[in-house]
Amino acid sequence: MCAQAARRQGFEVVAVAHHDETDPALADQVTEIHWVYVGQLGKIIRIFKSAGVRRALMAGGVNRGRLFTHFRPDLRALSILRRAGPGRDDQLLRAVAAELESEGIEIAPATLFLEELLAPSGALGLHWPDPEQMEDIRFGFNIAKEIGRLDIGQCVVVRHQVVVALEAVEGTDETIRRGGRLAGPGAIVVKVCKPGQDLRFDLPAVGLHTIEVMREVEAKVLAVEAGKTLIFDRAEMIRRADQAGIAVWGV
Image 1: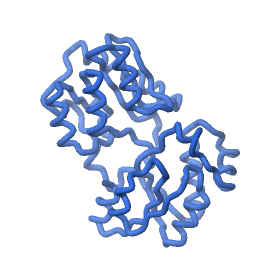
Image 2: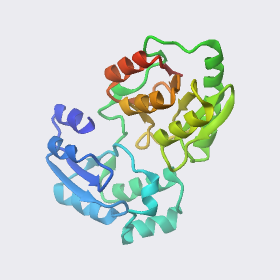
Image 3: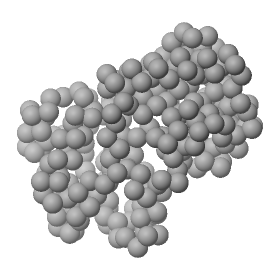
Image 4: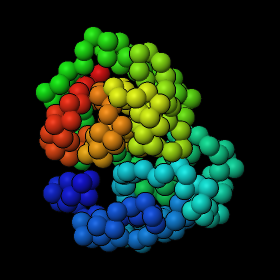
């Protein structure tokens, strides 16, 4: 979607895609696509410089579990790890951005072509949270902000003001599944932007699959931070949420 939006605005798009992470269909939307493994920073810089790229953005994410199975750091990446230290997403991403910018490649905000996808405030569909669910949203929002501040994750599942699941390396979908199994029907899912989030990367995102996973476990509310959460395929996502009786709420 990001590549399509960039092309509509007249840009040629050179994509660097991660093996086993990026949808291969991206190849049909870009001028060039080059495949790398997580950690091959030197290769990414060589690709961009060879193509004459002077501005880049980070779209999508990398499953942090890949760091244990598909991480192939080159010398440039190892140098950054020594300086920034492992394990802290924002710290590492800022260091990567600085390294690219030292080579004349500016990192643009992740929303550069996608501002229309940012979540609005209030109800996005037919269903509204009831007063008890609103209390859970407020409670979950504060908890999610705290785990974001600690750079652990962006999503929390709560019910009756009890935390039943926190997102870590497994990602949002598995957090919802685990939380839904523990809470039973009626769980509340809250996803927020980390405090002090660098808007150039790692913005929270939800979409069709988020709703499908919530349907699996009969979760009833998806609350996201308005203005700082990307919603993909919004019309279809809301249609499915309405069908499933799921309230989607922008905080």
